[in-house]
Length: 204
Length: 204
DNA sequence: AAACCAAAGTTGACACTGTCAAGTTAAGAT
DNA sequence: ATCTTAACTTGACAGTGTCAACTTTGGTTT
Image (cartoon, rainbow over all chains, first blue to last red; front, side, top):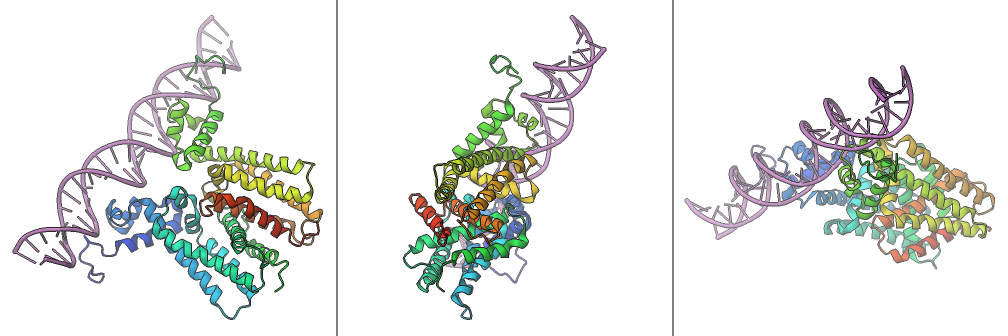
């Protein structure tokens, strides 16, 4: 377990974390298609099947990577929300911009986090859900807070507002990172329009 | 070339179409992960590499499948739009509902049509683009028409309105079919809310 | 009618993938 | 000093996409 003494190569010491790290590197460099357990293992300098002592299968590894992604995104949301310099309206702006920016900066990770591969067929691990749900819930809580403060109609169901809101942000993000909206220079402009649309009849 | 005389088995006669058809069946049955060229070929009753005479590679086959999907979706949009019984507002309702319904009915096909696999890295075929772009453009044209008729603010950039609108619809659809929004019974409710949100300060 | 060509379909081969079973190493507890 | 057990390795298997070389066939040209 000595990271300093590098002599003992048989036991890696911190393989699980290293695998997650390097796999995420590979994901960002060449996309999900190039993330194979064998290439990963060889790049980390370990045998083909070593990862199986830390992850049940490839799906579990992918879930682990997505998990870290949700922690990042959650952190970004928190930071924006806790910035006391901003008005409510600015908080809302910032949420949308930061969210889409995150997706744009980490397209393959974002794809992984929200993609079918991980979520359908109940193939998500418990750990993934434990990291993703609080992130989702934080977004609902923020929306609720904004609603209370007059940004949205208080009569509307808060969950629905938040679902439509997240849908919009998620949809725009995906259309960009999947290469269907191709003009990246227009991201901010589209974000701005989305914001103004949501706040069209807000009193604040 | 005789479909009736089934004796000559060497030449299939209509392999390209059959491959697209059966591949799409496989997609709907067991998801993209179970669509392999070899299983497809064997199911069609042809050798492993026969498909290569009709599609450059697997990607081209997938593009071909998506192509058909866009034709379907385009048709659905047209049908809804050309229904003369409906008011403008109802047309708008119908577009959103039909769109999300299509995605919900064909989750894997929808995933394929709009996913990274096909669009990123310029890996889309010319034929796919020729079938997808008119479909996208029709949606922009509809939005423009609605804008003219007073559903949206005429001062806003029509392309932006349409991009945000499509983003919302696409995002909600994806969150459902990817298994992140899990309560399918709430689809209509969310659609309704999205519609009312977009038309909050419409004059019509 | 004979010869020919190009399209359509075949088999063999290769490198790559995820994953299992069985064996090896070594770190830490008794 | 011994033992347990987690971490790691090698060998093996079935499955994948795709290439090259070969065979069959239908239609066109002489």
